[in-house]
Amino acid sequence: MTQTPTRGGGPGTGGVRAGSLPDAGAPGLPGGPSAPAAPRPAWTDSAARVRAAATTEPGRLRIIGAVLALLVVAFGAVTAWQIQDRSTAAGNVLDHSAPLSAKAADIYRSLADADATVTGGFLVGGQEPAAVSARYQKDVRTAANLIAEAAANNQGSAEARSQISALNEQLPYYTQLVATAQADNRQGLPLGGAYLRYANDQMRKKGGLLDAADKLYQAETERLGHDYDHAKALPWAAWGLGLVALAALVWAQRRHYRRTNRVFNRGMVAASGACAVVLIWLLVGHTVARAQLDESARHGSKSLQVLNTARIAVLQARGDENLTLVARGSGEAYEANFSTGMNGLAGNDPRGVGGRLAQALALADDPAGRAPVDTAIKSVQTWRGRHTAARASDDNGDYTTAVADVIGGKDSKGKVVQATTGQCFDNVDRSLQLAVGQETREFESAAGDGRGALSMLPAGAGLLAVLAAAGAVFGIGRRLSEYR
Image 1 (cartoon, one colour):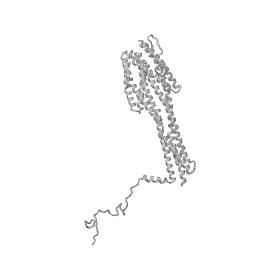
Image 2 (cartoon, rainbow, N blue to C red):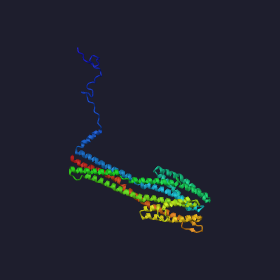
Image 3 (cartoon, rainbow, N blue to C red):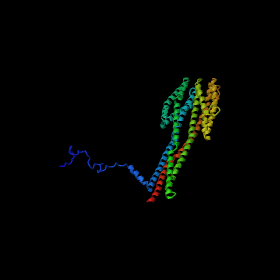
Image 4 (cartoon, rainbow, N blue to C red):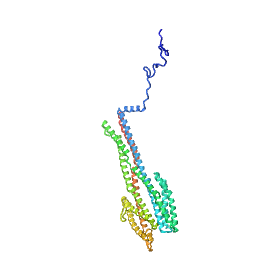
């Protein structure tokens, strides 16, 4: 009797163990169902459809239209973004960084004028004249108000905020020292002169009021330079995209001509024209803006920096001249500072033109700007001559005449001195103030023109780009309609 092998048969029986052979019809085996295929990514289907469409002329036209529209819109968007960015920087030059730089210079000038004014009042002896006291108080109030404005409007560097804080801390201490010096001077106490010199040291020493004001001015001027650079930066991305978009439109029209013998496709011609207008507008507008900003920097901002530095040098020279007499025979250091300051202001030759005033004269580009600088130069030359006479009197022991030569009044012989160094100082300061006003107007005009050259470009570029994209799509659509 023949035995039939069964599952689970024991040894020697010819049976097969359960599980030792796979079941027929299992997935993946011959005769069985196939394993499910892994799902394909969606992008492969899209790519396949694009490849299939590219084999037909309508499909190719649709792809060309989409690419053209994308290029034109990208060109418009990048142009609007880059020009808006530069227009904002030009606005910052005109409305923020330049005014803050000017305020920092005015803080320095007010502090230096206060120092020069109070030292002049000490030469009178006893109660200082009312005009001197009023001018000193006005300078202190102006400096305090400008410091408060700078603190409220400053969003610049940590350096600028640090110097504003230093000015706020030190100004009350300086005014306290001056008040003590004036009180002692009214009583005829020699200690008043010592307090005044100490107050002057607090004003001028490293880390003092003028040093903090100078660092604030440098920080704000650096910010102004950064805004200038940002406003004048060339829009390379917009130019590049514009050329690519225009070249693509020309290529598409040439392709259209070669396939249809039709010279013009109105939609794509309109798109090309709009693109060309934006590109030309971008080139001309930015070139004009850059030229105007260069003009405002060269004959406005730079000239103002030189003039402000000159005004500060004048004030410091006046303070040194006064302190030389206040020191009563021990003012050699102040006299040396006066000589150094005058050389930097007007050159080493007392009868010539040099230093910062020569720079200011060279930067003034019209008669209205040169005239006050010329007047300042003549007044400095006269000042130096009168100062030499005053020093000769003081060195010869005629202190009364030396004081009269500096601040006015009667000399040792009872004669009223009419021509004083103080008058020269006032003339120089007034002339330089007129020059600053003229250069400020030129700066504002040129910087405003520079910003104006960019003002309409972002919106215009965006609108024309949309019209160009619509024209390209319309032109391709007219071509596609021939296949329906």
